[in-house]
Every structure is written in structure tokens, then in C-alpha cells.
Length: 421
Image 1 (cartoon, rainbow, N blue to C red):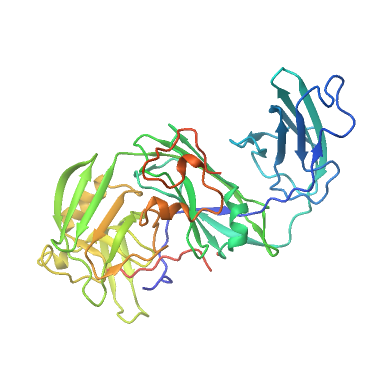
Image 2: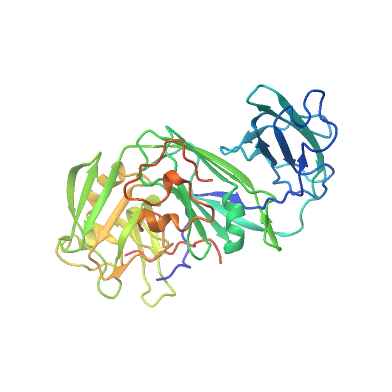
């Protein structure tokens, strides 16, 4: 299957970059405010340590508290400007809402309050490193803002070059997802490090708002790379639509909100170019496009209408008036799902990017990473792809229901091919 033939996929380019903070400022140091010394307030340690230099611009203010909780964090730059920051849900640190500036000095003042109301305040001043000269890893976010997606839409980030295993935890810690209403999920890496997905154990509930941030700019990734950008996107989940395609019957069943609304005859891939079986997600939709496979073993150029991409390798659902005579009885395509021109137009009006498409009974299985394959494995196997520990409420267990408050937390990015057919 050719992964190198290109077709433009609407996407948002994102960045990747590491977090390196040196030492910590702890409450054992002299200088606590009157009435806030040892034994009076909670124990508090802060990173970066006082006077640390060459701090990455991806840095966050780390906090460790015993006997209390952080109640105030104020970060200012060397010109007196306040730096907005957001707390991690586990309380381990505060992440600036935008990357810090290179070669600048920042001061963070953190206050923790104990159970009896006593406070401890720590202040630390640090300086960021000059603008990095290392090569930036390119990240591509396949989750645009102000869109409506299907209930199977995974938040997907692709990387070029791939992220090595030893760097994935650092990158994953800088990928933030919030859902409203809460529906926590887990990040999972494709084994070669080219893509990482975020999804919940079950499909998103219709009406859910998903807000994403890749806070990767300036993050050191290994010894040779940094991240290229800091991106945000917020979108909604629309109605539930799913397609089930059975090679045995050569029929597509279209479900909306759990109810069967239509059956459509199909023609799948012929034996020499079989369609993949598995759980896929609609990746993009084109009212008109051209499949150009010149240079392959089976070269052709054909214009198609109402095409919906399912894989990087070039499998689509599309109108194919030339095969309407055998749709429902014979497979003659180059791997695509052929439907009538009328049915393809109807499908375009009810499907969304992010809808689930399940194909079964063909000669080959869907390869990992050939498309957004986050649903093509069980939850137990999916969570094994996380580079960070999985919260107890989301750990694999057939009898466990996720706790509403649980939180989770390189070769070129996939290049779409235009096999079509």
C-alpha cells in the first residue's frame, strides 16, 4: 500500500518541544515570611530553582506541597508584565498560557495554604535560554478549531521526524485536552512514533466541546530537536453517525443516533487491490477530487465526486457511476468503497469528519497508523500505547467505569496517497 502519494489534507500545523527545569526552591531555605516558617505553614518546593539559567521557553513552574495546596501563583517577566498560566489538574505545576520569551528573566511567586489556614510563600527567579538553533520537529494537528466532528473523532497529532520512545512522555505531558461535559480519555502512540491519538473509552457524547492545546514550542526533544509551535483548537461533537460495510453482503448500513436509516449497495476492492477490514474514521471530505496513481503498478487518473477519505493509503468512499451495475454483487474497485452517485451525494450530506466506518470480511486487515486507527484496537490494548501512567479510573478493566474526574496526564508525518478507485 503506497503511503507516499500526496493529497492535501486540511490540517493545522503544530509544534513539539521538551521541558527541562533545574533543581527546586524549597521551604527549608531562609527568607520565609514572618509566621510562615517551618512548622507554621505547609512545606513548599518550587522549580526552576532560584538563579537557574538556560531554562527552555517551554518551562512551567513546578510545585511540590506537603500539608497543603497551592492557592496562588504569580509569574512576572523582567519588565513587570504578568504571565498568564494554567494549573495542571494534578497540581504538579503551572503551565504558562503561551511560550516564554528567549533570553528573558522571570520571577515566580507561589503561595501554598495549609489545612489550618497558614501559608508558605516561595519566590524564584530564572532566565530562559537564547533562541534555539536546533532543528524543530514538525507537528501536524488533525483537529481544527470551530468545526463539528463525529463522535469517533480522535484528537490526532502527527510528527516529522517521529518521536523516539524515550521522548514521548515529555511530549505527551505537553498535550492538553479538556472536554465539556467531562469525558476523560488517554493518549496513545502509534508504535513508530509518527502519530499520537487521544480518545475516551467510549465515543464522544453528542454536544461535547473539546478544547486542545499542544504546548510544545521550545520543548527539548532528545539531544537534537525542539518543538516548532504552540497551538490551540476548540470544536464540538455533532450527531452520532456510523457506517458498517459487510463484504459478505456487499451492503453498507447507515446508522444515525443508533438507528438504521438506510442500506446502500457497494463494490469493494477486487482481489488484486483489496479493501482493508477494520474500524476507520472519516478523515476528510471532497465534493470533487482527482485520483492520480501514475508511477504505481496500476497507473490511472480519474475524476471522482463526493469522496470521503478513510486511510492514508488512499481508500475512500466515493461515487462511482461506472460500477453501479455490479454494486451489491461484485468487487471491482482499487480498494475504495464504490457507491452510486446518488448514494454518495446523500452520504456527503449526513456524514462528518470523525464518523466511524467499520468494514468487515475483506482479504486484508487495516494496518496500524494507516489513517486514524485509534478505534481499531480494544481499550486494553489502546492504553498500552500511553507513554505516561494511565489514571486508575481509565486503566483497562471490563468492570470499571471511568471516574468523571480522572485525567490522563517521527519518519515523516503520514503522507496521504491517492490510490482511490
